[in-house]
Image 1: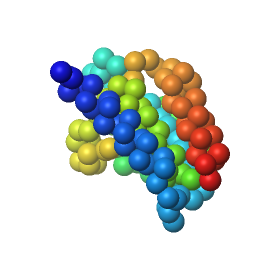
Image 2: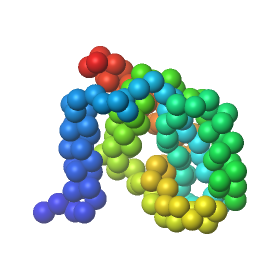
Image 3: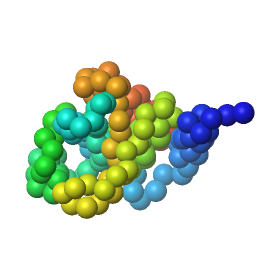
Length: 145
């Protein structure tokens, strides 16, 4: 019998395969995949937002820092990709299929339920998990296009 976490991981892996082989759409255009760490002393692990944008990253940073100012955001380099919607979605699914929790809770600042925040085990997860994963997924998507 499988546990709920095992089912959730398997489901994410299945969704990854479906999204990977899905035909490209209008939304699969050039953009940037970005990430920042949300500094939250109440969390035992580390929260990372992984998103995409087609606008200059400085504009996106300003939006986020203004929209949700109560927690410090540590921003990392962006990764330019040709199919930003696809790569972002696949990175999210890959993180979930590896067992990293997607944190969906109401933001105390903007009151939205952010969908792209993940709980990761270390503060250097950008270097060790997220950035390598973005490059790996992007490489596979590029080889497919």
